[in-house]
Amino acid sequence: MGDEGRYGVVDVGTTGVKLAVYDESLSRIFYERVSVGFEQTASGYVEQDAAKLAEVVRGFARKAKSLGARKLGICTYRASVLAWSREGLPLTNVITWIDGRGREVVERLPSYVKMLRRASGALAQILSPDSPAVLMRWLLDHVAGLRERVERGDAYLWTVDSYLLYSLTGKYYSDATNAALTGLIHPKDLREIDIVFDLLKLPRRTPEVVDNVVDAGSFEGLDVSVLIADQQAASVAVGALREGAIESVHGTGSFVEQCTGKLVMAGGGLVPLIILSLDGQKVYGVEGFVRTTGSIVEWLRGAGFFSSYEEMEGLASKAGRGVLVVPAFGGFRCPRAPDVRGLICGLSLGAGRGEVVAGVAWGVALHVAYLVWEIGRRVGAARDPLWASGGYSQSDFFLQVLADATGFRVARPADVESSCRGVARLLALADGRLSKRDLEEPPPPQRLFEPRTTRGERELMLEKYRELLEVLRKWGRNPFLSGSF
Ligand SMILES: Nc1ncnc2c1ncn2[C@@H]1O[C@H](COP(=O)(O)OP(=O)(O)OP(=O)(O)O)[C@@H](O)[C@H]1O
Ligand SMILES: [Mg+2]
Image (cartoon, rainbow, N blue to C red; front, side, top):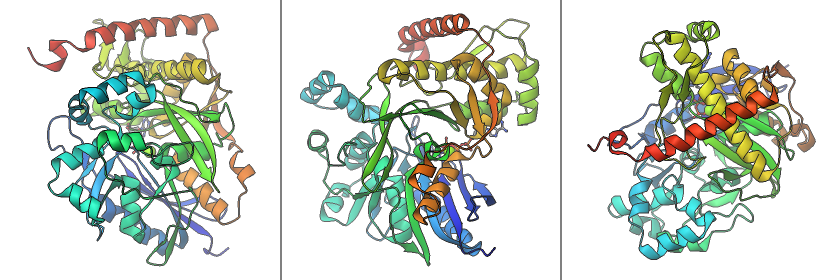
């Protein structure tokens, strides 16, 4: 078989940028990962060097082509913004979704805007500190001359997916999955949401909002045909595209997405999503997330708790129970508790490294169980199994306790790089090798983890965890945690 049908996928994750190349039967024939790192310009600010990121993406596109790819698809981390010039040169760093500065904008909003915000759940969500629309306003307020340049059409201000495509092909596009998360484009009809532009005084220089499979131009002879947000690509990978299907990805953070059929504004810190838009037809979903999960694993490694994932797995599987690490290192959005911070509870003199490592798995699993419960009660129960992928899903210990905490059978696909695989499936659709119906078919699970708990045990665990969150929420805004004593 020749290499004429190969697909190149670039997955721009928050911690790692990955290149995967697949043959026409979607077997992965090449994989590489690089880390771009963060620029910490001030306390609480988490930026990324946009020029460096674009350089890595261009290098990966060239490599994909040299390995025989004819089509390229890109998925990106989401809700992160920057400004760039008409020549495609960045004018700012990428302000990432983990960054905390949106709070400065929200606190300074005029009182009538704050009132509107209190009156409308949807506006409260869009005008929240981690909203891309709010981060765009921060850039307009802090980068001299930016507003004028954007208004003149001499500069662009939008999300990282749009910038990366612009730097590759010169097209100013944003795909529906990314655009609908900005707070500026309505997920229902992809129209601009006038009131948000007015309240935040943002220039109306929006990109063309496009489907996930699209002719997005070409880079050095390589056609860019798929653009999608990374977590949504993971839903495509495991075929979670029918109402009630549920999947989770555990990378830097953990994300749970349930397909809802129609658009639902679930509230409670859950995010309404477009999971996929093909030929103008949209698949909707709702998402809950924890910002820090795999990053806590890395934090423990940095602190010397273990030196390899094998060692971590060994320690966790031999550990006794009773330690819980609440994974709130970056606060929680669901439940709304931005000021809560991480907590290790249940320590005794008998607790060792293993108990703490196991406690992270239990903490993440319980919080994911909380998200699944919250989604279920707001939009309807999900259908078994709960798919789990991403780097941290390689831990059998974690997936077993995820099954124990949620009561779902947890299914791990053979390929845990699900964002990449979702894009590859869409490239195969673009090529006519897969149909839309094929996309809804889940892959055979590589392993299924059966829950070992009774319903009563799970209900009690969740109830106790909710009580703990309530206590932590009350405790969140205190001088000790803010360091202001
Ligand atoms: N074998 C392993 N066992 C357990 N955890 C692992 C293993 N390999 C990687 N991880 C964890 O997975 C995380 C990385 O996952 P992944 O590569 O899916 O993230 P990413 O795609 O870079 O980030 P993003 O969340 O932005 O998509 C790391 O935090 C790491 O701690
Ligand atoms: Mg990822």
